[in-house]
Image (tube, rainbow, N blue to C red; front, side, top):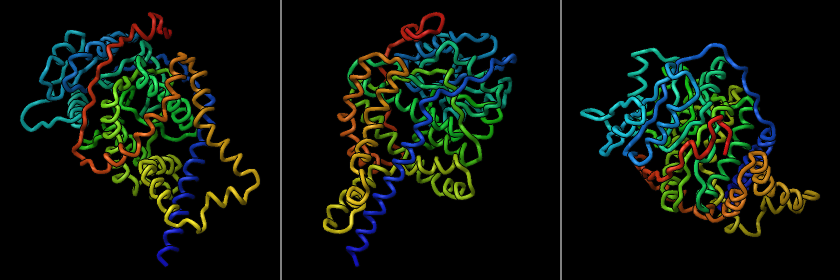
Length: 416
């Protein structure tokens, strides 16, 4: 009886992982077509651009300079740096670069990105005067046309918007590997979800909410991955996150293994927590016919994918000699082995090559992608570390890139 249960569990896990992989594989086919840009709007909205920062004196000036330099009427947007319990010169350097500084510190105020954003947005909403709120990380930059593209999308009816995220730096093999992965994610995850009418992923930078949406969807004070928690909050309440490809944000990639591992553990811990808190409600909503909630449920389930895969492999070993779904498929279906190998090559080689060609990426990024297995080998220990970390683990990543917006685009906004 015990072995029968293990065999059933093993094959259930194999079947579930196979279906999950096939779903995202077929969804990704939508990525070969770029979403159409909304028409140019006549009305110009007023924006508040917020940057939460904790001890970011080394790079905050470059971030602010890219934001205040956006090609949008200067009287129609303000840049706010939310200095969250900073003990260095972050506030002074942000102010010198042209930002308005909001000091999040003092009795009764706890540090934390979600808390700082909630505090700042509530204050700005109470004061009024802004039609929409945009969010950037302290290590990100904005394309000069970011606000113009967001304005057009808002006038077309968007409420919660995510800009396209491109790599800011790729100076060594680690950052090149991660930069190439970011391009693949944008092309074959974000683009397809938008095209299929689903909710795209919020990434923490390049986000935009109307004032009504900012009042409705409040930042979670305790979330480790506040952007993912917000994404699920929007979907649970019947909303959608739409992609705006013309609104480009540039994200810093880790350049050392400690930076990468620390960030990955935080993301893993945060993803597991988000899945625990949101999955039951999303599944109930999916059963009522909400396609975006169904995909978001699968997105949450992917947080457990590494653990489920490791358990399935262990069960296959423990039940060797019994029925095995993958082995049976190989033997029973004509051409199954060739088909499975072909399907595995698509996400591993075809998509990365297509992404890098369509993005006109630098050749070194293609070489960087070949190092994916090296970083991939760390996924299991990172997952284990994420499981055993508490929800209070932050693991702040040190930001070291000094790439400026002038290093990425020329005065016309064209990429260099």
